[in-house]
Length: 492
View 1: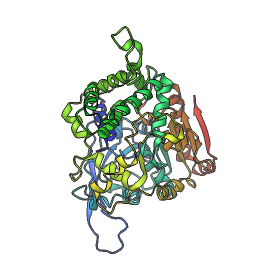
View 2 (view 1 turned 90 degrees about the vertical axis):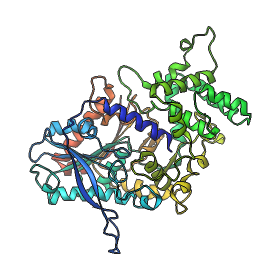
View 3 (view 1 turned 180 degrees about the horizontal axis):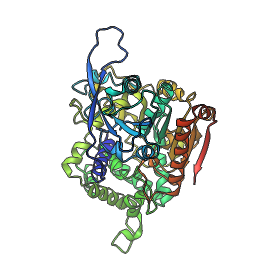
View 4 (view 1 turned 45 degrees about the vertical axis):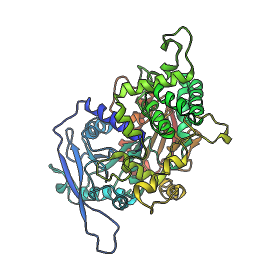
């Protein structure tokens, strides 16, 4: 099981359950073929894709703002509690959220076996959304319970992987999508994503605890690699985790201490400070002498367990990488996402090689073999190992170079930054035209796509204002926006 996805999914469901949303939003169904690109004529299987509508502010002729939850189930959060809802209010538009195939209750086939997930391709995913938009533009009464003109303009938005979808939809279907707001879109594939580890460490260093944290990771590795059964068991007890293998233990600890890494940074503070670095402060202990870095690392891990309300049996299930390999029931976020990592873009979260001289902020046990080792066990011998990330980038990153009307954002401190177009080493789309790239100073992952709050950083507010102006331009003067050169900005 992909630990971080499992933990973040649980956290997200807790979040949305605490947000007041319009529960009157109805769920609708749209019929799709299992395979849009079958040319044999033998595959006529169909399935129902779920979508929701927020038409609270809609005026006839207003734009449609589309979003997909990506690797999450469809909830009214996506129609009511994202920035697109504010755009709908200001433009007389509506928000349409459409569930991604093989997530939630939108399942083309009755299980998540490797054979079924073979139909989870980027081309099929995008064509699902394109077919839906074509229906809007040819037969809107089949989609909406109210009158909507056929020439209605569509803007696609989303954050993280859903930001990928937004950017790809504009790039591949510019005749259907006027523009895309791609917040923290992780569009660049990396087989061994040690940059994730480095961005996490940079965030810790900004907060002042990166050095002690890295030392603790090394000290724990020394124990895990020692082969001393008693010392290993004592360390696992100290960290409050069940008796897993050393690699699974290291993976679970890494997931727990990074569980706040995507949380929004606001004027009231940085959640990573509270969730991680506060445990490395001297005043966090009751002893007169500071405890070791390893003890502080254990305290942070136990703090995450308590904060997330995890019980030992829950952690055993989440942490045991040998469990559930052949469990193929639908509505498993982590299984579907693992398939995408195995077959699309990699992104395995590994430490840097020692030869690079870079500081490691996660265990050396979490190497490429650990992560991709179960791909064939889960999904079958047909799965390529390793996944061809170069081919992925050649098709799905390069398609963005010629695209127009895409607004890319990235948080300065987000752990996924080096998978966005605005990496810490510079922009990956320097020759791109017709779009805008903004690095949001002091911000985290996807903050500009969240609903506005008075506690937002000024830089986040500025990034939204830039995006709002671009959207207005796309909707009002398409030719002008197509001719703009790319601009890279840091919202300070």
